[in-house]
Amino acid sequence: MVTTDRLTGWLAPSISGEPRYEALASGLRGLILDGRLVPGVRLPAERELATALGVSRATVTAAYDRLRDQGYAHSRTRAGTRVSLPSSIPQRPDDVDVPGPDDIDLTVAALPAPAELPSMIDRAMQRLPPLLAGHGLHPLGLPDLRALIAERFTVRGLPTRPEQILVTQGALQSWDLLLRAFTRPGDPVVVEQPTYPGVIDAAGAHRVRIRPLPVSTDGWDLSQLSGAVRGAAVLVHLTPDGQNPTGWCAPVEARLELLSELAALPSSDLPHRPMIVTDETFSELRLEAGNPARPLAAFEDSGRVVSLGSMSKPYWAGLRVGWLRGSAELVSRIASLRAGLDLATPVLDQLVSIELLLAHDELVRARIEQLAANRDGLLASLATRTPLWSAARPQGGMQLWVDLAGMSSTRLAESARAVGVRIIPGPRFTVRGASHDRWLRVPFALPAERMDEAIRRLAAVAEFDQRVVTDGVSRPSLSWTA
Ligand SMILES: Cc1ncc(COP(=O)(O)O)c(C=O)c1O
Image (cartoon, rainbow, N blue to C red):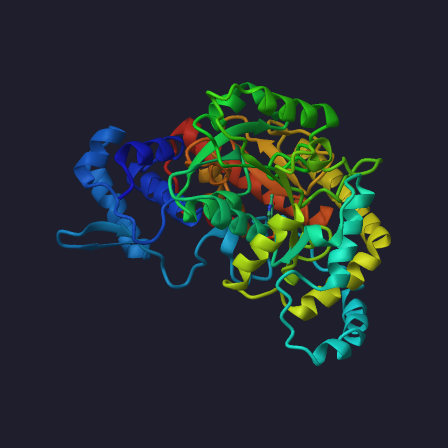
């Protein structure tokens, strides 16, 4: 059951419209669609929620009725009202099925495959025949691929041997494997807040105690580091390059400061040193001139820093190939663990990854040019169409963290569905799903014209919602379309 306190906090920004029951139903629907209320969860009793929200019981009854009619809730005698999902909608906005032809999906920060991919696949197939004689299971990854990944680390300033690389099915799987290997339920684990929802969901699945380290477009709030790691955090998950969602790229000074703050903590605060996991998924996508920053592990020789990377952002997320870099001992320990889970990463995807990495410089240069143009186009659209919203210009990654000037992103995400735009509201990037509601993550993986159309639609619903909030006009169902 979701506690009434928590639900009230989540709903507060989005229930000011009229009629009240519609606004409440819409707020609850938003929470269901963005994954904060999962199917099966019991909603508070009507009377209790009414008191907590300061509305009449009839309002809550009507809102629950509305949800039931739409398939977002069901009730059984003595089992209360529970969340459900209508069969025709995707489970949550970041888990969409095929969008409609005119829908704009801004829930995923990942580029379409490069145009060269089909020819790379043809070339990769030429590497296949010698492998066909074997069983095809390589829990550590294909040697050629491990060597190429190690070389990328070395080029970025962190000398690496192939034995230090484990090929996985993505950075997220690497994170999951580390949680499996090093945590037990209840252990403290630190993640940035806001951060990519997959990082939080994977930690939640291992039932660890998740502690947030605040991060913004200006970087980590290191004044809160000791509070976050207190009680001996086991793992600290950081994304120093193109942080998702803020887009922040940690300069060298910030990397050094973080490590020295951690080293300086007294043993009463930190009896054993946590493992620092740096998710460098976006590290090759530095949008400004200059090389990618040196990996965090290059500044720490204790072996406590493990780096994660992936083909997903520079190349194509459909490959499901990522990696983990650590000591050779760590790599073989995690490889034995993963052998009992998924055995190995698919050989064909690894062969394609080899071809892509061999063409790294040319392919990634084109990606960076494309992303920098998308970013600047999106910033221009925001400046023209939603002048009250603001966003920093990130030097990496592929997302803007947009300050909505007080608007609720939960509410906006819900309204945006009516105009064919799918977005994930800010709170989905937080540990408890309760804060950052006036922020919106907007990926710029789509071309500038498409992004401009998305912002045009968002501006229209935002203006509409704002009028509803400020004038208290009754809120008809949205029928505006692009
Ligand atoms: C910080 C971060 N880690 C991991 C992932 C997922 O990576 P992969 O596709 O390699 O599992 C993402 C994708 O958005 C991400 O932003």
